[in-house]
Length: 335
Image 1 (cartoon, rainbow, N blue to C red):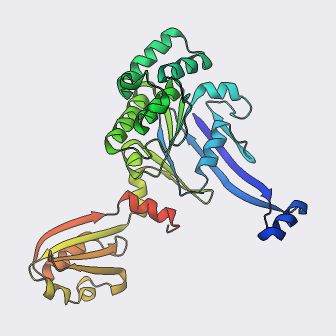
Image 2 (tube, one colour; image 1 turned 60 degrees about the vertical axis):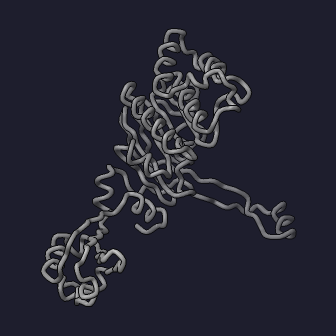
Image 3 (spheres, rainbow, N blue to C red; image 1 turned 90 degrees about the vertical axis):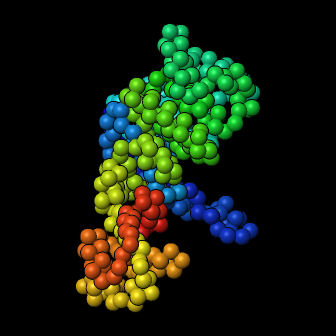
């Protein structure tokens, strides 16, 4: 179990001044700039969960992960990873976790992948029997044999990402931290990496903390997401609950027999609502009339019923808010 209790991280840096005079002034100034990157965040993650930890650039995601892995020490609060304080018991914590950063590698660039794995086996003190068992599993889920004996520098991005994921799992960690694990990958390789993560989680009950901007990663893998913005936690729960809470926008698209006549109708009067609680869009080429509204202001059933009584409707489509739109709104501080 992971316990994060009221952690904060403040960075203090010398104040910088513009221009050459400012640079000289900075040499003699004691003024400091205080930046609170993570502000009083708490959560608990159970064994075997896959949790998406998301937020815009600069929201505090990476800082939180670095405190959980022991790279940074919290200014306030504490983290416990399976009862271990990652800052005080670094060696024990290192054996309990695996880390994959999308733009970095823990593999030796000029060595064959097989030798990198052998070195990691010794570093983590993995027995020969456990190593054989682990490699059989990793070869199966990650398709490593095709490039296992090639130097790491010759691997494609997709191959290297799978190799890095395997390297993080050699010692069977209890917790796996993934930072943008599918960034830059094509759709086929993305599917392979996501499936590998899913299988690893199911087989070994590995707890997975996933930071990503890829909505597909979240929808395919995460049963729960934590959203942070400007260093504060603003949501912690399931995807369905997130959509229910924030995804209130609805779009009802109707194919009309007489679009021009439908456009001229008094829709505010038909719906019995002020015109500012909904908008109407027309697609002349396809004879489509779209009504966009918030479900808290209008009910989909009322819109459909009123529209069908007022005009001749051939077909109806209902669109709910996509997760990508909700996350985009959060990133733009729209929620």
